[in-house]
Length: 266
Image (tube, rainbow, N blue to C red; front, top):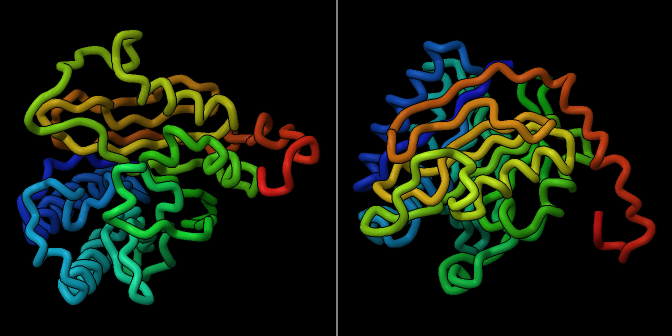
């Protein structure tokens, strides 16, 4: 299966995000990708980005999701679309899964919030496996994939061939100027991506914004921990790779002896 990972510019508004979404989805569709993943809280943008509080209005977010569904159907490509979302009076950080016909299959909420996010969102309470055209996958959002490897192992042990990882690491105002993906002097994020794939023997596909000072680049990692393809730092665009689900055996995840640990560790 051919998959795509988007590295969009930081959206100036909800409308601007939808325009960038449409453009990058079209690029991926023309390259015959069957699913594309965007970074964390992409609509309307991670807190602190230029989007206004009005862009987080529930009605506007619902309208944006409907527009994204139309974009998916028009281009016949599935989306992993992170958004802010309201559910049962809770404000959540989620990633929707939309199929190639524009149908919403569900969402994964961020369960493990970064401590700095405790006053922004409420934590989700469940994990899910999704399937598009026979490809089973999980989703972990930013902090979860970097600091809670159990979230990825949970998906791998339930048949996921790939875990998508929307995240935001970096700044548009200051930070390191990285030049080489995975360099030993880089922040640890890219090494964590490699480990999430290697320690579970599955693919791991991570999407970051194209900020001016990113601390990681979007990348697709193979089950042996090698980087299949990565985006250039600060470049807005799409990376695409053919993945072979047969290589994602989940072998190392399946050998985890959960009986040796507390029942809640899976």
